[in-house]
Image 1: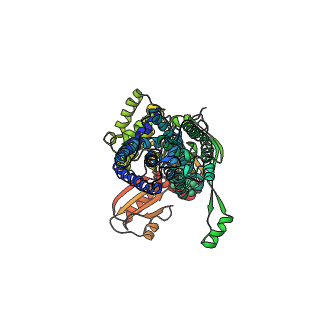
Image 2: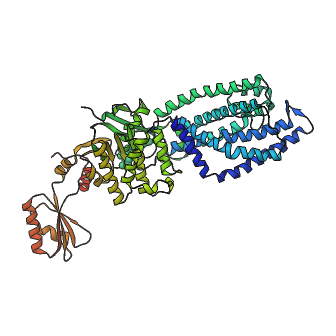
Image 3: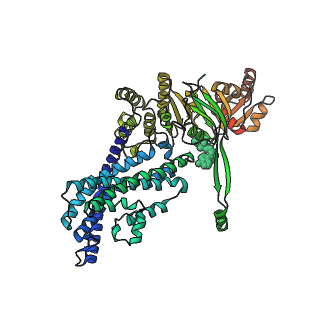
Length: 263
Length: 338
Ligand SMILES: Nc1ncnc2c1ncn2[C@@H]1O[C@H](COP(=O)(O)OP(=O)(O)OP(=O)(O)O)[C@@H](O)[C@H]1O
Ligand SMILES: [Mg+2]
């Protein structure tokens, strides 16, 4: 376990070394939140609520989804693809650790860094500009924290899957890009799932994507009540467990037919 | 007898599809593809005992790196048996990799953006090295390799030779009983090479570390290895003592003449007619080398005749170098039995 903690620390150090990149990131996220805020203000007009969400809840939803994205989002699919293409996986195969586990920890190190140096200050800035409501129920905060941790796990697992696909496709830039669009769209980041047509919501129930953003944001804005919270967390937990299966299968096959590029 | 490395009929085939040329070819490639099979390692069997330092040599593309990748468990063999440190590298992978150290001269295993000592610290945790052992052992390694001043620098800021010494230290953090080195001295200056060789000798003597080393610099092999294994197109063509190789192949001597004036090939050849002498021109028309059989009568006769006819500025008798022996073997591709 110590080695995984050490990996989180190392990644944290690496992010710290390049921290200036992130200050500009805060600005970009704020602009995004602002744009969506004005869009939704126009859509709401003088309606007090749409799909059970008030305009304040909607703004909070947007702000929190973007800030949570900073935590769960990572580029480990790209990193894995690069390591495979450059033959660096060879080195990873001679280390006494689980490569995918290590990658996940690197993602976590990155996520924790962004949470502290990006999401928290970003949230403070956004709070002063837009009408946002933070809940005062400690329980909601706890559910939210559990939920974004699960978001991180699900999103990272999907990244691992796309990353490992490089073993079979060799060049999977297209797949990685498509995955990113699909996740932003179907996770509820851009549009809450409850705004989708009913048949589409039915389809979403069978996909892991809403566990990445929609569920945690709905918990935070208190758009979910009582049992809905537990159903949401259960849904996330189940996906986190289920996704282990294809990862393990793909990884075992990949290792067997691993070809290391270069002398 | 227990062997550290025990390999039988090890084989690796790479399938690669060749693309047809042109648009029409690319279209046909969509439906049927041409496969070619390349046998990189062809039924290799070898055994290495504990504490041996073995040089693994061969031309570019002979299959050295591929063998090492199979021995370290990175690649799965097409067929054959591999036992290294008593384990199958593909089963019990985590336990197996703890018992080996690997340096690939061509690629770094340190983390690019962080200081060398952070990499060491991470590897120490990864290999579960106890503090007391780490402190004494690594202090020693760091001192012998002279990398103390490099520890707080990020790897991307190191020169090749500086990095390579750190790579070697990193491979030894857990003091493995078996060390694989794939071209560890590629691109290094003489001093760093010497330092690395001294260091390898030292850990071999101190811990009985077994070392399998590939290199294109035969002086590495001469300095370190009693035994060489020579590979050609995936097959072992020689496995034995380096000394033996020299005895079988290096029977000849070379006489290097520096004449006071220019000389021609025809002129020299007519001088030494009657003996088997191979004349080769050196740097300029007044420098010539005569390769002869290692026989005092012949050497004396050749020198006598040449000196009698031409003015001499310098004269040297040298044995044929290992490099030349190996070159001859690569060119002929077979071993002449002695
Ligand atoms: N991934 C691969 N796909 C197809 N062929 C490969 C692959 N890797 C190596 N080969 C082929 O296998 C042969 C042996 O390669 P290898 O890297 O083992 O050579 P080497 O002895 O290490 O050479 P060098 O001295 O140049 O490092 C070469 O002919 C090479 O083209
Ligand atoms: Mg090689």
